[in-house]
Length: 170
Length: 456
Image (cartoon, rainbow over all chains, first blue to last red; front, side):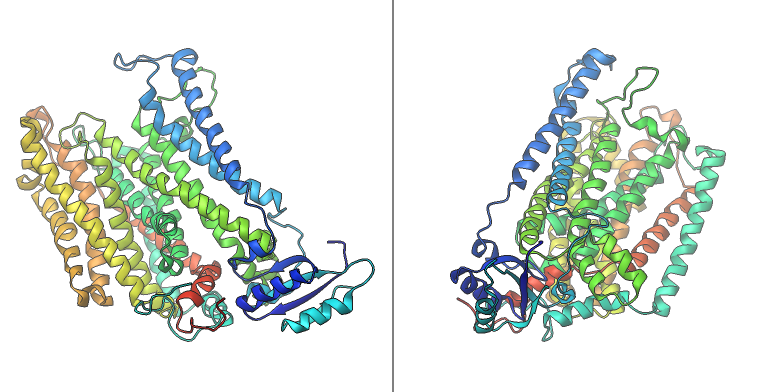
C-alpha cells in the first residue's frame, strides 16, 4: 500500500461491523480491516467476491486423481505388467485407493499453496504490521486518503463511529 | 444469532479477548514447571529404551523379535494400527466436527491435531522398522529405477504407504494453516528479539486482514471436507491389510467400518487421557470444561457401542458362515490359549465405556481418566487379538505355536510412547495449545456475557 492512509481501531467486532458499514456509506475507501479472528458479515460489507479457492481445490483434486489412476494403469499394462495370481492387469478397483489418496493430497496442497501465493504469505514474508494488538483484541480499519486530501472528513467519520487511536501513516 | 438459553457456555469465566490471549499463551511463557521436567525426563528415558531397541533391530535384524514362522506379525503391526487409530481422533475433532458445526471443538482441536501428527509419526515407525533393512525403506515408493520395476499397486500394504503419507501430509498442513493466525499472536506478544524473529518466520507474515481471514476460513472448511473422507479412508485401508487376505479371522467385510469406529474410539480416549492432565497442568480449566469432557465421553459411548456390536457380529458371522476354519478361529480367540487377551479386550472396550451412560460418571474427571486408560489398553488388545490369535493356529496343526514379544519389541513399543509424550510436551511449550482465534470467535455467541445489546 503505497498510499496515504489513516488507521483507527475499535474494541468490539459488532462496533466494527457497524462502523465499517457507515464508513462505506459515506463513500470512504477502506483499504483493509484487520481483526484478531474472522468477523462474520465483514466480507459482505466489504463487497468481497466468493472465493475461487474451491475451484483450485477441485482442479487440483482432479489432476491428482488422473495422475494416480493413469500412472497405475500405465505401470500395469505398459510399464512393467506383472501377473499377480492370474488377476487382470487393468484392475480398476484395486487402483482406487491410491487414486483417491492422490486426489486428496493434490487438492489440499494446491489449495493451500494457492492461498499462500495469492496473498504473498509464507516463511519470512514481508508484510506491514499496522498494530501489534490486532492479533490480540483490537479491530483495526485502514482508510485510504484521496489525492485531493480528505483527512478531516475521514477523522470526523471515524470519531463519529467511536474509533480510537486515530493515526496517519506519514 | 439465536443462542439456546439452556446450553452451558463453552468458555467459563468472564473472559474478554485480551484475557483469552493471555490465558492461552501463559503455558508458553516463563520457565517450565517441575512437573514438565519430570514428565519429559520420564518420557525421554522411555524414548531411550526405544532407541536401544531400534539399534538392536537394525544391527542384528528382525531375529531379535519374538516372531516365528507361524506368527509373522506381532507387536509391531499391533502398535502400528493402535497408533494410527489414536491419530484419528484429532482429524475427527477438527474436520468432521467442523463440518457438523460443533463449536465445542474449538477448545480441543489444536492439541488433538498435534496428537494426531505425533501418533502418525509413531505409527509410521513400525512398518519401517519391520522392514529390517531400514535403509531400503524407499523401495516402498514408486520411483524410476534401473530395473524398470514399479511397486505392486494391487497390494493393500502399498495402499497403506499412500494412505498414511497422505494422511500425515494433509493433517500437517491442516494443522499448520490453523496455527498461522495464532503464531501471529505469539509473534506480536513476544518479548525477546529472537522469539519475535522465530515466530514472525513461522507465522508467514500474518496480518489479520479481513480478506485473508475470509479465504483462510474457506481453506479450513475445504480442508475439513477433504480430511473427513481421508480419515475414513485411512483406517479402511489399514483394515484392508487384514481384510483382503485369506486368513480366517481377518477375511471379513465388516473390518472397514469396525476399524474406523474403533480408531475414533481409541483416539478420543487418548485425547481425554492427555487433556484431563493438560487442562489442570496448564490452568486451562475454563477453556476445556467438564462440558467438553462430557461431549467426548458421548462420542466414546457411541463408537464403543459400534465396536461392541462389531465384535458380536463377527462372532455371529463366523458361526453363520458355516466355514469351520472361520468358526475355529473365533472359538480359539475366545476360549483358546489367548482367551485372556480376548476377555481383556471385551471388558475394556465393551463393558467399561457403557458406564458413561451414567451422567455422574461421564462428568467425573477421575472416572473419565480411568476409563480412558481402560479404553487405550482395550484397543491395544483388540489389535493384538486380531493379529496374533488369527495367526498362531494356522491351517497346519503341526506348525501351531505361541508368540510372546522379546525385550526388543517391548522396547520399541515403550519407546514410541516415550517419543509421543516427549513431542507432546515440547508442543505445549512451543505452540499455543488452544486455537486462540477460534476460541475468540465463539466467545460471544456462547460465552457467559454473550447477550450484548449489539445485535442487529
